[in-house]
Image 1 (spheres, one colour):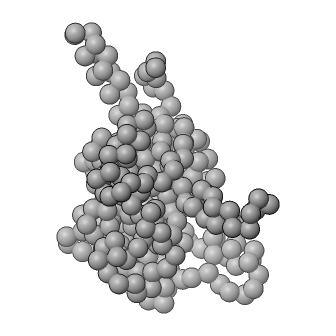
Image 2: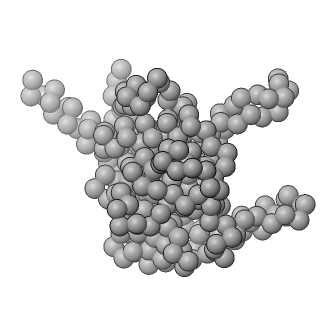
Image 3: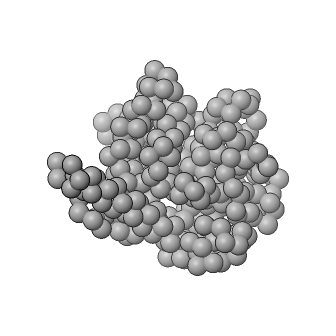
Length: 275
Protein backbone atom coordinates (compact mmCIF):
# COMPACT_ATOMS: atom_id res chain seq x y z
CA UNK A 1 0.00 0.00 0.00
CA UNK A 2 1.36 3.41 -0.98
CA UNK A 3 1.78 5.73 2.00
CA UNK A 4 -0.01 9.08 1.96
CA UNK A 5 2.08 12.11 0.91
CA UNK A 6 3.25 14.69 3.43
CA UNK A 7 0.50 17.16 4.23
CA UNK A 8 -2.28 14.72 3.28
CA UNK A 9 -5.61 15.11 5.10
CA UNK A 10 -5.36 13.09 8.32
CA UNK A 11 -7.70 10.19 8.96
CA UNK A 12 -9.65 10.72 12.19
CA UNK A 13 -11.26 7.80 14.05
CA UNK A 14 -14.71 8.79 15.33
CA UNK A 15 -16.60 6.84 18.00
CA UNK A 16 -20.32 6.33 17.25
CA UNK A 17 -23.19 5.57 19.56
CA UNK A 18 -25.55 2.62 19.21
CA UNK A 19 -29.33 2.82 19.36
CA UNK A 20 -32.38 0.62 18.93
CA UNK A 21 -34.39 2.44 16.26
CA UNK A 22 -37.80 1.80 14.72
CA UNK A 23 -37.19 1.37 10.99
CA UNK A 24 -39.11 -0.15 8.08
CA UNK A 25 -36.94 -3.26 8.49
CA UNK A 26 -37.75 -3.89 12.14
CA UNK A 27 -39.36 -1.96 15.03
CA UNK A 28 -36.22 -2.58 17.12
CA UNK A 29 -33.36 -2.20 14.65
CA UNK A 30 -29.89 -2.09 16.27
CA UNK A 31 -27.91 0.67 14.53
CA UNK A 32 -24.70 2.60 14.99
CA UNK A 33 -25.62 6.30 15.15
CA UNK A 34 -23.89 9.67 15.25
CA UNK A 35 -24.83 13.32 14.89
CA UNK A 36 -23.56 14.50 11.49
CA UNK A 37 -22.20 17.70 13.06
CA UNK A 38 -19.17 15.76 14.34
CA UNK A 39 -18.29 14.49 10.89
CA UNK A 40 -18.99 17.83 9.23
CA UNK A 41 -16.75 19.64 11.72
CA UNK A 42 -13.83 17.27 11.10
CA UNK A 43 -14.30 17.51 7.33
CA UNK A 44 -14.51 21.31 7.37
CA UNK A 45 -11.32 21.41 9.45
CA UNK A 46 -9.53 19.49 6.69
CA UNK A 47 -9.63 15.94 8.06
CA UNK A 48 -11.25 12.74 6.89
CA UNK A 49 -13.59 11.29 9.55
CA UNK A 50 -14.29 7.56 9.73
CA UNK A 51 -16.62 5.75 12.13
CA UNK A 52 -15.07 2.98 14.20
CA UNK A 53 -17.38 0.14 15.32
CA UNK A 54 -17.14 -0.84 18.97
CA UNK A 55 -13.96 -2.72 19.77
CA UNK A 56 -14.95 -5.93 21.52
CA UNK A 57 -13.03 -8.73 23.19
CA UNK A 58 -13.07 -11.24 26.01
CA UNK A 59 -11.23 -8.92 28.42
CA UNK A 60 -9.41 -5.60 28.69
CA UNK A 61 -6.18 -6.99 27.27
CA UNK A 62 -7.86 -8.40 24.18
CA UNK A 63 -9.80 -5.19 23.58
CA UNK A 64 -6.65 -3.11 23.93
CA UNK A 65 -4.78 -5.35 21.50
CA UNK A 66 -7.55 -4.90 18.94
CA UNK A 67 -7.76 -1.16 19.61
CA UNK A 68 -4.03 -0.85 18.91
CA UNK A 69 -4.56 -2.40 15.48
CA UNK A 70 -7.48 -0.04 14.82
CA UNK A 71 -5.67 3.13 15.91
CA UNK A 72 -2.59 2.18 13.88
CA UNK A 73 -4.73 2.93 10.81
CA UNK A 74 -5.65 6.43 11.99
CA UNK A 75 -3.92 9.73 12.69
CA UNK A 76 -6.18 11.02 15.47
CA UNK A 77 -9.16 10.14 17.65
CA UNK A 78 -12.45 11.94 18.30
CA UNK A 79 -14.32 10.62 21.35
CA UNK A 80 -17.89 11.83 20.91
CA UNK A 81 -20.84 12.41 23.21
CA UNK A 82 -23.48 9.86 24.11
CA UNK A 83 -24.91 7.92 27.03
CA UNK A 84 -23.69 7.90 30.62
CA UNK A 85 -20.69 5.92 31.81
CA UNK A 86 -21.45 2.78 33.85
CA UNK A 87 -20.88 3.79 37.52
CA UNK A 88 -19.41 0.36 38.20
CA UNK A 89 -16.63 1.32 35.79
CA UNK A 90 -15.26 3.66 38.46
CA UNK A 91 -16.32 1.59 41.45
CA UNK A 92 -19.57 3.34 42.37
CA UNK A 93 -23.19 2.34 42.75
CA UNK A 94 -25.76 4.06 40.50
CA UNK A 95 -26.77 7.44 41.96
CA UNK A 96 -28.29 9.47 39.16
CA UNK A 97 -26.58 7.80 36.20
CA UNK A 98 -28.84 6.31 33.54
CA UNK A 99 -28.76 4.71 30.10
CA UNK A 100 -25.28 3.25 30.01
CA UNK A 101 -23.84 0.43 27.92
CA UNK A 102 -20.69 -1.17 29.27
CA UNK A 103 -19.67 -2.29 25.76
CA UNK A 104 -19.38 1.35 24.72
CA UNK A 105 -17.35 2.18 27.84
CA UNK A 106 -14.98 -0.74 27.23
CA UNK A 107 -14.51 0.14 23.56
CA UNK A 108 -13.96 3.87 24.06
CA UNK A 109 -11.49 3.24 26.89
CA UNK A 110 -9.50 0.77 24.79
CA UNK A 111 -9.32 3.25 21.90
CA UNK A 112 -8.31 6.02 24.32
CA UNK A 113 -5.38 3.99 25.68
CA UNK A 114 -4.32 2.80 22.22
CA UNK A 115 -4.29 6.38 20.92
CA UNK A 116 -2.25 7.54 23.94
CA UNK A 117 0.25 4.70 23.46
CA UNK A 118 0.68 5.70 19.82
CA UNK A 119 0.82 9.43 20.63
CA UNK A 120 -2.16 10.19 18.42
CA UNK A 121 -3.98 13.47 19.19
CA UNK A 122 -7.33 13.09 20.96
CA UNK A 123 -10.31 15.43 21.15
CA UNK A 124 -12.86 14.22 23.71
CA UNK A 125 -16.34 15.78 23.76
CA UNK A 126 -18.97 15.54 26.53
CA UNK A 127 -19.17 11.79 27.24
CA UNK A 128 -15.69 11.68 25.71
CA UNK A 129 -14.38 13.87 28.54
CA UNK A 130 -16.07 11.56 31.03
CA UNK A 131 -14.53 8.47 29.41
CA UNK A 132 -11.09 10.11 29.44
CA UNK A 133 -11.57 10.95 33.12
CA UNK A 134 -12.69 7.48 34.18
CA UNK A 135 -10.37 5.66 31.78
CA UNK A 136 -7.38 7.36 33.39
CA UNK A 137 -8.49 6.76 36.97
CA UNK A 138 -10.75 9.70 37.80
CA UNK A 139 -14.32 9.96 39.11
CA UNK A 140 -17.61 11.47 37.92
CA UNK A 141 -20.51 13.34 39.48
CA UNK A 142 -23.39 11.16 38.29
CA UNK A 143 -26.07 13.86 38.21
CA UNK A 144 -25.63 17.61 38.57
CA UNK A 145 -29.09 18.84 37.51
CA UNK A 146 -30.87 20.39 40.45
CA UNK A 147 -27.57 21.42 42.02
CA UNK A 148 -26.54 24.00 39.42
CA UNK A 149 -28.36 26.89 37.74
CA UNK A 150 -25.82 26.69 34.90
CA UNK A 151 -26.69 23.14 33.88
CA UNK A 152 -30.46 22.98 33.79
CA UNK A 153 -32.30 20.07 32.15
CA UNK A 154 -34.48 20.67 29.06
CA UNK A 155 -37.92 22.16 29.46
CA UNK A 156 -40.96 19.91 29.42
CA UNK A 157 -43.75 21.94 27.82
CA UNK A 158 -44.87 19.13 25.55
CA UNK A 159 -43.57 20.95 22.45
CA UNK A 160 -40.41 19.01 21.63
CA UNK A 161 -39.31 21.39 18.87
CA UNK A 162 -39.69 24.50 21.04
CA UNK A 163 -38.01 22.75 23.98
CA UNK A 164 -35.09 21.67 21.80
CA UNK A 165 -34.59 25.14 20.34
CA UNK A 166 -34.61 26.73 23.80
CA UNK A 167 -32.31 24.09 25.26
CA UNK A 168 -29.81 24.14 22.38
CA UNK A 169 -29.78 27.93 22.37
CA UNK A 170 -28.64 28.30 25.98
CA UNK A 171 -25.12 29.56 26.64
CA UNK A 172 -23.08 29.92 29.79
CA UNK A 173 -19.63 31.21 30.58
CA UNK A 174 -16.60 28.97 30.97
CA UNK A 175 -13.45 30.40 32.56
CA UNK A 176 -10.23 29.05 31.01
CA UNK A 177 -6.83 28.73 32.65
CA UNK A 178 -4.38 31.18 31.12
CA UNK A 179 -1.78 29.59 28.80
CA UNK A 180 -3.56 26.24 28.86
CA UNK A 181 -3.82 24.38 25.56
CA UNK A 182 -7.57 25.00 25.44
CA UNK A 183 -7.06 28.72 26.05
CA UNK A 184 -4.41 28.89 23.34
CA UNK A 185 -6.68 27.03 20.91
CA UNK A 186 -9.20 29.84 21.46
CA UNK A 187 -6.57 32.47 20.74
CA UNK A 188 -5.55 33.04 24.35
CA UNK A 189 -9.10 33.63 25.58
CA UNK A 190 -9.64 33.45 29.34
CA UNK A 191 -13.38 32.85 29.00
CA UNK A 192 -15.78 31.59 26.33
CA UNK A 193 -19.52 31.00 25.94
CA UNK A 194 -20.62 27.38 25.61
CA UNK A 195 -23.74 25.28 25.39
CA UNK A 196 -24.67 22.79 28.11
CA UNK A 197 -26.05 19.35 27.25
CA UNK A 198 -24.83 17.14 30.05
CA UNK A 199 -25.98 15.97 33.45
CA UNK A 200 -22.72 14.30 34.51
CA UNK A 201 -19.38 15.96 35.15
CA UNK A 202 -15.82 15.11 36.14
CA UNK A 203 -14.93 15.42 39.81
CA UNK A 204 -12.54 18.32 40.33
CA UNK A 205 -9.94 16.72 42.62
CA UNK A 206 -6.21 17.13 43.17
CA UNK A 207 -5.56 13.55 42.09
CA UNK A 208 -7.60 13.98 38.91
CA UNK A 209 -5.50 12.39 36.11
CA UNK A 210 -6.09 15.25 33.68
CA UNK A 211 -5.44 18.92 34.32
CA UNK A 212 -8.66 20.89 34.84
CA UNK A 213 -8.31 24.02 32.70
CA UNK A 214 -11.91 25.18 32.32
CA UNK A 215 -14.74 25.65 34.80
CA UNK A 216 -18.29 26.98 34.70
CA UNK A 217 -19.16 29.76 37.12
CA UNK A 218 -20.55 27.17 39.54
CA UNK A 219 -17.21 25.34 39.54
CA UNK A 220 -18.28 22.44 37.29
CA UNK A 221 -15.43 21.02 35.23
CA UNK A 222 -15.80 22.07 31.59
CA UNK A 223 -12.35 21.54 30.05
CA UNK A 224 -9.44 19.21 30.77
CA UNK A 225 -6.20 18.39 29.03
CA UNK A 226 -3.00 16.38 28.98
CA UNK A 227 -0.78 18.72 27.02
CA UNK A 228 2.19 16.33 26.78
CA UNK A 229 0.00 13.76 25.04
CA UNK A 230 -2.10 16.15 22.91
CA UNK A 231 -5.34 15.21 24.68
CA UNK A 232 -7.98 17.92 24.93
CA UNK A 233 -11.39 17.26 26.52
CA UNK A 234 -14.39 19.60 26.71
CA UNK A 235 -17.73 19.04 28.41
CA UNK A 236 -19.78 21.10 25.96
CA UNK A 237 -20.61 20.30 22.33
CA UNK A 238 -18.39 22.43 20.05
CA UNK A 239 -19.69 20.63 16.94
CA UNK A 240 -22.94 22.56 17.53
CA UNK A 241 -21.10 25.88 17.86
CA UNK A 242 -18.71 25.83 14.91
CA UNK A 243 -20.31 29.05 13.60
CA UNK A 244 -19.57 30.67 16.99
CA UNK A 245 -15.81 30.08 16.87
CA UNK A 246 -15.66 26.57 18.30
CA UNK A 247 -14.45 25.15 14.98
CA UNK A 248 -10.96 25.84 16.33
CA UNK A 249 -11.09 22.69 18.46
CA UNK A 250 -11.52 20.53 15.37
CA UNK A 251 -8.82 22.48 13.56
CA UNK A 252 -6.49 21.73 16.47
CA UNK A 253 -7.29 18.00 16.23
CA UNK A 254 -6.82 17.89 12.46
CA UNK A 255 -3.68 20.05 12.41
CA UNK A 256 -1.93 18.10 15.15
CA UNK A 257 -2.97 14.80 13.60
CA UNK A 258 -1.50 15.94 10.28
CA UNK A 259 1.74 17.09 11.91
CA UNK A 260 2.16 13.82 13.79
CA UNK A 261 1.36 11.78 10.69
CA UNK A 262 3.87 13.74 8.61
CA UNK A 263 6.55 13.22 11.27
CA UNK A 264 5.94 9.46 11.25
CA UNK A 265 6.05 9.30 7.43
CA UNK A 266 9.23 11.38 7.35
CA UNK A 267 10.86 9.09 9.91
CA UNK A 268 9.93 5.98 7.94
CA UNK A 269 11.36 7.47 4.74
CA UNK A 270 14.57 8.44 6.51
CA UNK A 271 14.91 4.92 7.86
CA UNK A 272 14.45 3.45 4.37
CA UNK A 273 17.13 5.74 2.94
CA UNK A 274 19.65 4.60 5.56
CA UNK A 275 19.15 0.86 5.09
